[in-house]
Image 1 (cartoon, one colour):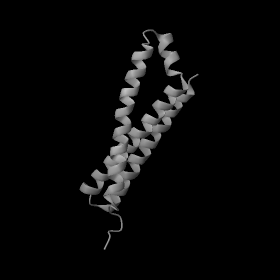
Image 2 (cartoon, one colour):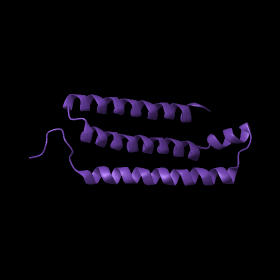
Image 3 (tube, rainbow, N blue to C red):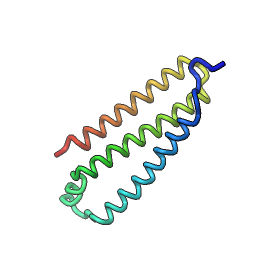
Image 4 (cartoon, rainbow, N blue to C red):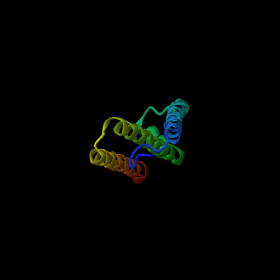
Amino acid sequence: MKPVLGARGGTGSWLLQRGTALALALAVFLFAGAFMLHAPFDFASWRAFVLLASVRLAFLLTGVAVALHAWVGMRDIFMDYVHAVMVRLLLNGLVILVLAASVLWLATIVWGTA
């Protein structure tokens, strides 16, 4: 019998965790490569680099990948170590709220400046 509020299947979580880790590793190499190609050394060149639509999109997608990666990790930790269902639901809700607010804040930072 399956638990009502327990883990469903580990394969999806495992794939999402590995996929976001791969996306984050790729982002590090892409940002490093773009930085080396553009080599911004003063404020004007940094601003021009960051205002590129591709760089903004890359920042936002990287932030979403970080949030998903953190969510899967925290959810698995809570499922393994927090046995009280209501406490687990409260902690999951708080993590979702903080991560969603962080991604929205990143989006306003990245796309809000012109």
